[in-house]
Picture (tube, rainbow, N blue to C red):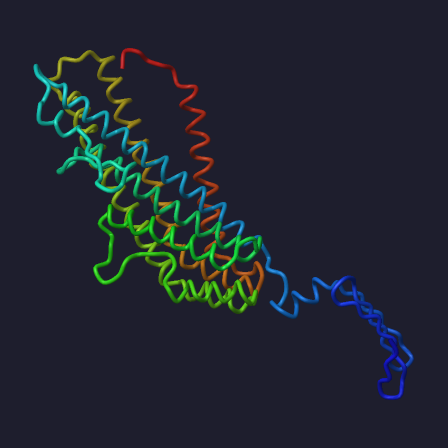
Length: 349
């Protein structure tokens, strides 16, 4: 096709739907040839450039690490409480009938696969419920991060599918928040408000970076609510660990009293047990501290994702903090698993 521009002739080979576009532009006797792919042109025009997937991938992988690390440390809390309950229950000449009765679980009407402990619950059963609720909150965080990848990177989701997924995430958070006693009286905790859901739906329709940035920024309050819930849970878990530690350490300290008739070798063993118990508590508190720090960083990480749509990977401070904590926690439990597999099985304990 021949086109006349300013008295000079320029040939434009234009096939917008099927192939690359070549523009031959003559200006001052200099021929400029621009070869641009159609897909890149359309993305640049419609959404301001391709979205860098790396910040979203980092956020998603870190969310998985946080969930698994929290579940691991809370499983230790459950084990401690369970062991103490068994020891206390069988102590003496007879088993406590009241404690045995409180072991009986109850079903939850209308929820076929759920269970609940009798009230007031035994401590280790409370620890199990607590762990399950925290796991549900972390699952919601993992699902949120995965949904963002589907929205921003993969593009394999439509508006209706997104609405269903967002509703499911909100439902899980609300159930877990109620179990933890974290439900706000004025509103329910959820990761997607009605306004935020609409912004994400608009993004799916337009594929505009600005719409996605607006949706992420509009979701800050919801991320803050989840951040607060998980941070509070880690603080509560530290109190639970101290309660279990106090019982165990007091028992060992009483064994080491001056009027105790244990041999020197027995006393040495108890001292070693107390030192190892201290080290175990310190290690678990450090894990909880890092989890707490990561959960506190969630609102900043969400802001980082929004900013990355404009600035790329510059300034992803909160995402990097969560990533580094997640990496540390992964190494901690890798080493712990190795130590446990090499630990001798002492049948006398």
